[in-house]
Length: 223
Image (cartoon, rainbow, N blue to C red):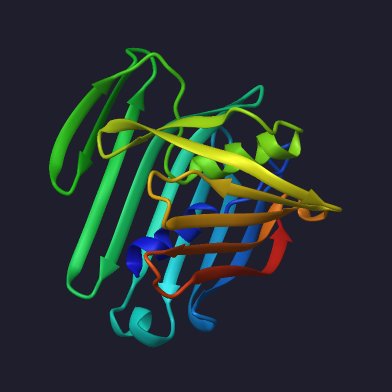
């Protein structure tokens, strides 16, 4: 269940063409029953943007296990290219904790990080995104009219992973986008509303005949 919640949260970030600052609030449902709340906030200081996802289990098993997750990326916007400076993930489920973080040394083109207590280093010259920054870039691209080659390199767990998406339909102001999975039994969909700055008004995930997980927008506020 936890893994599927995280997939949904990945798609809960939305696009603002000029990176307008915002806070968005969602409700998380399992098989139609409320199990949690999440928020996504884009802030900015004098130098950098920060995109932060926060999630808490409020009902059912998610509440019983005390599910809490915070994921944050510090990044820059270089003429539309989002470039990470650092990434940090903290997650707690019952007595289990997960920590993951890395820092980007742009001058020397090196990244140093830690995943589950294990240190790692990586050298790269290619552009990449973080696990929660990829959503922002995806929605920027879709709302700019890009409907093909929605493929992104994402750095997580000390390695580069390919994230692939596909625009499957458009009706009025709603654009449906699917994440391409390696397993046919795994389905992830999101519905973006171009009248709400490409905010996903709903996301959906299901796999292996298990209960569906959904997120639904509560509200958005601009800073």
